[in-house]
Amino acid sequence: MTSAAPSLQLLPVCGLPMIGPDSDLAAELAAAMARAGLGVEDGDILVVAQKVVSKAEGRQRRLADFAPSPRAQALAATVHKDPRLVEAVLSESRSVIRAVPNVLIVEHRLGHIMANAGIDQSNVAARGGDDETILLLPADPDGSARALRTRLCPPDVGRLGVIVSDSFGRPWRVGTTGVALGIAQVPAVIDRRGEADLFGRAMQVTETGFADAVAAAAGLAMGEGAEGVPAAIVRGLAWQPGERTIRDGLRQAEQDLFR
Image (cartoon, rainbow, N blue to C red; front, side, top):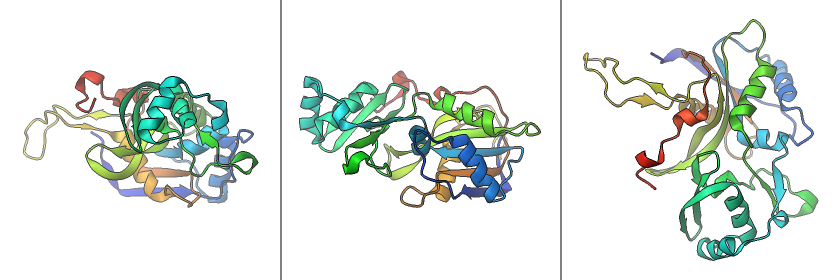
């Protein structure tokens, strides 16, 4: 059983410089934590915003790099978006789920159902003074999380989880919330089916989206605008490490009522 401890803490990692393709993100995170006196403890989960991971991995592109196909041009007319942006979205996607004015929902090539394939222009420094720079998701967010964990986990710490997080909208709710795009050691889902509830009844359907819940909690400390806090440590949770991937938390298409 995994539960929140009374001492749950959200510790923002502040003071990172602007991250770019020449940055050593792990070294910058380690330096920022050291300046803040945030030593890594057993059981910590470090949540890192997708944007700084993508920037460090050189996932910036320009709209001019994308020549719109006839399909992109037709979709652009429907969704009222730049045809080059639509082409970029298609290049990162398996399929289009929904296309209406101002909304383009796709299945990303990594399996996530999301708007615009996660391509973003907010908090992305423009090249050459224009506004045509876009940022793609990391090519392998699980791999990104594992690489950061390898660099940042001290030898005497057995449990250090790393989550690469992003912000998603939700079908039943207004507003975005943090979700996990990539994980290292952290369980994506904790299956509690068969456990007894308070009254001794066996739970039938409860599967906790653990990694998403941690990402959402960390988002409260990180912010989503101009806060400039791209990482946070979540401390005080009970969890068990393992060899996990974010695919454990993706709903299969035959179970997805929104497709």
